[in-house]
Picture 1: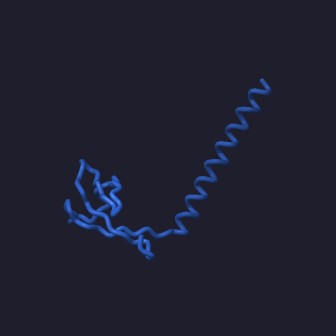
Picture 2: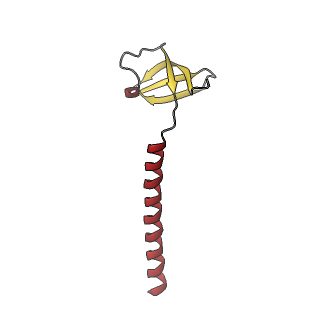
Picture 3: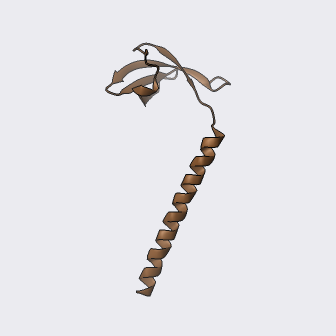
Length: 85
């Protein structure tokens, strides 16, 4: 991968609503075709860029933390009910 987080893949084929992308090292990725540029065709070379999104990372961490707390509370309530009854 290049320093800027960008590298190339080729659009191998479409399988229904999925696109099969091939990386430079031969791995296959299945991605929703709707994520590709609308004019993409089999054989096209596409740039792929990965960038961190700190804001979305924080939002996700909060949602996961909230879910974990709710699950722990529910488990604790169920455990308390078993010991009392």
